[in-house]
Length: 47
Image: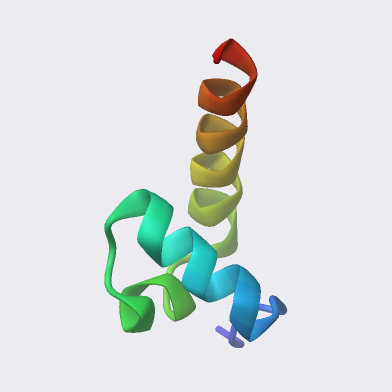
């Protein structure tokens, strides 16, 4: 499995908002990461 194609800034932002270590973000399967990103976006839209 190849590494995720996301920028360093995006990875740091995701790790902070999901409370997941940065290394775990970078090795997470892409479909799971996309689901987590959608979850974050839904929470932000509810505010």
